[in-house]
Length: 429
Image (cartoon, rainbow, N blue to C red; front, side, top):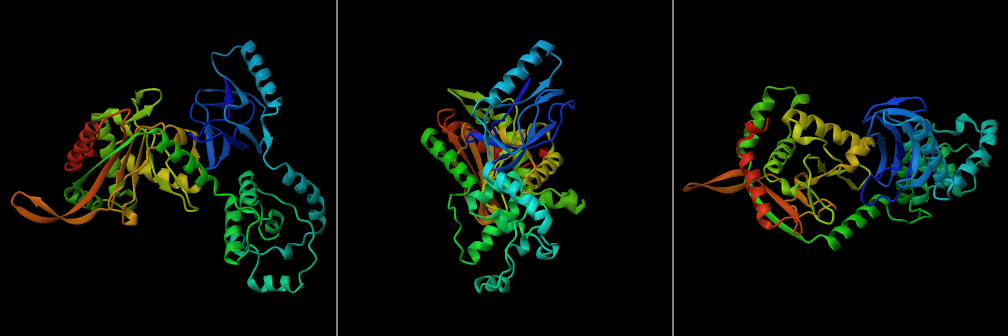
């Protein structure tokens, strides 16, 4: 089996092989991480999808390869020696072709040139104690530089992650200057903090390219609006009983074990999709219904941008497992530790903007998916019950559907089922 540069999103054309996480001779099981892949959405853990032994690693770390480029050969049970020999030859031949490009050849060369000089002349006293918070020094130091009091600079060794180098190129950050202030290897976060400081001081970065994630989102959403005929439906759902049930449930638990309303809503969406499966799948020259439910959960990154990693096998999880998986997904997203499965297996998207005060969400479907479910803020509203009017906690749930794959009636059936499920939260455990 040839391990190739994975496609970690419909908009991904290439990725940087940041680091091999396995070596030749290692035995891997399905789901094990073989490499870290840098994309516009951050560093993603590349997994293998079959059991096998790493026979030959060919691709180099720090190099950008197009999606589908052979990177390594893995021997599976069905592979004989002849097959492996042929795959190794094919992989080496593919990488010998001028398709891959050095991610930062110029910077690497500069780093090599300066390394020797840095080791002999750089003084530890010139490096501040803190890293990102002290990037580019204090204002007093900056003034000294303007007055020409700065000490003659000596070359420094630039040690940075591939993603940091990429971000530095995009944001116009001088890595050598940054290396004088940062202990150890420079991370992408260090670069982004440096760029912010430059902006605060009025410095204009030398590069002004838009954020790669912004560009990726722009490409996906442009494609969605160009290709997908959307229809939108929404309905208010009385959450009073569900929230009361959650309050009583959480009162018996530790803080770590408590369930958030978001997990209850995800669980209800999954159950509703089991009843109305047409909304869980893709449009690829026709509708495809997925037997598995992997909802992509919209999560805002701290450094900006939005990402929708998949909550894998949500249909096999109970409420506690859903809450645990949601917590893990958020931590992985914000820690840059998502796996390739979480980046590629979404079958529908769920977004919740209630924490920002939004009442209703009319989302844009992420192609090739065929639906997106939105939740707004849970609000107190007047609610008719029989002949009386009462104040109840209500959330507006919405569905954006691909009109090629389903009609509004399908969306309406889904919302009706969703509302019914949230009236009996105990059945969602």
